[in-house]
Figure 1 (cartoon, helix red, strand yellow):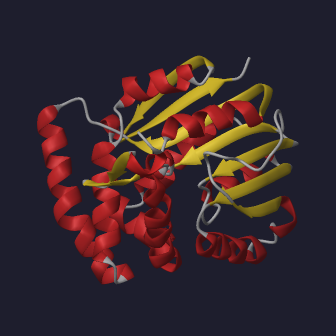
Figure 2 (cartoon, one colour):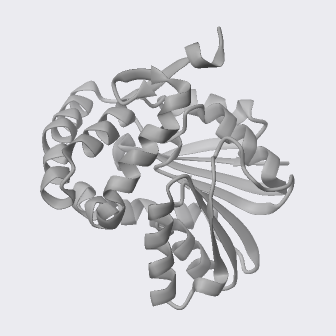
Length: 249
């Protein structure tokens, strides 16, 4: 099979692997200016609690270097640096318009000298081996064409003793609860996207991409396959989201 014959998911649509990154870039370019507002509306603000839980488990330390992949508008980086007290973050995202929104936030919060903004691909990070103390990716890895390659790259660029932390939507263990959550996701979120961001299709894709992402145990196996030790996960809000952690030892 040639590279052009390989396929993957774009929501519920099957597309060529080489086309997915461009499609994802189109989604986030469309919603960049309303992305943070939509996160609050879609989750009722719960995404903030999940991100705080991520920081609680991560326990940032002063002087650490963070790589925040698919970091978009920098939400995780701001939280990390404020918790650490000092340090540096590099936010990498495939969509430049998301980074532009993040730079505006950094300037408004007088944190522009602590954060670099890099356009790049999670599957081919433009950094040397053993560079960062912490790697985070929040609600982004399901949009990567080949998530296993992104995890392999995370392992490569982390220093020995470095920490991986992935926050992503996941699967509820109770079928009835999952059915109710699906009903909300498919019927409400795209409508919100239309009203607030003027873009129903992008939020339809985002809902579909959640359903295609591996469950907690399957993704845990992928983290271990990348080489991470002491890999674990924690469910958030009964499994609506999950945190996966691993160490490069």
